[in-house]
Length: 240
Image 1: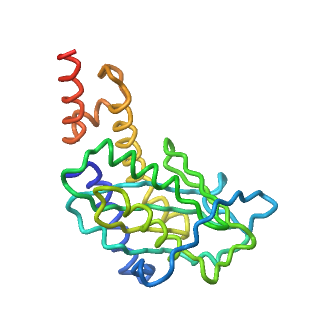
Image 2: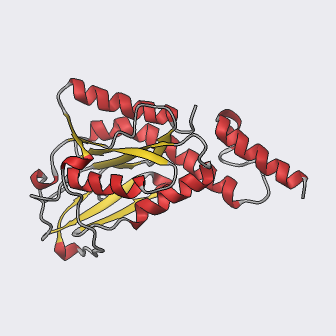
């Protein structure tokens, strides 16, 4: 089982439930042009609306699997399209799911996906992620062309960016601009994904495995891939 399989399955269950109630909009990423790339600083006075602003709920998680039915380069949307959102904005969730090659290094894959996500800058859009809290905050510029640039174009650009990471075979992206109950359903799997990511970074950055009192000790004992990474670290320590 891959590191993120449990939280990914919760996200896929959310997608299927939205499909069953007719709330899911699904499209292939290659059916529209990606959102144009351009670094943009969106100041408050230039903001058309915000997604996931501090007073609203938001969810972010970047996850992968080697075996689950993901990575078909699909863009999923639950909730209104960008052009239909009110000036007050909306709560927001953004969850990319990557299908990866089995032999890919966990630590290298995690850092490469994370860095690729943060390098993506789109014209008229400013994105900030707080990884420790698994939240995301976006500003859309008042001059952004939302008739051509919506969630589909955003997802296509993100899929294109993440698919270039070595070991990635394909990516699906979920956007949610719906009511808070929908976002609440995704908060728990995002928090678990955040803890797994935190454990990966700690295992990668600490040359000495100080397990006593570590906030991720329970994960390293229960998640097979983290156990393997930890064991490899302990072996390196033993051999100096």
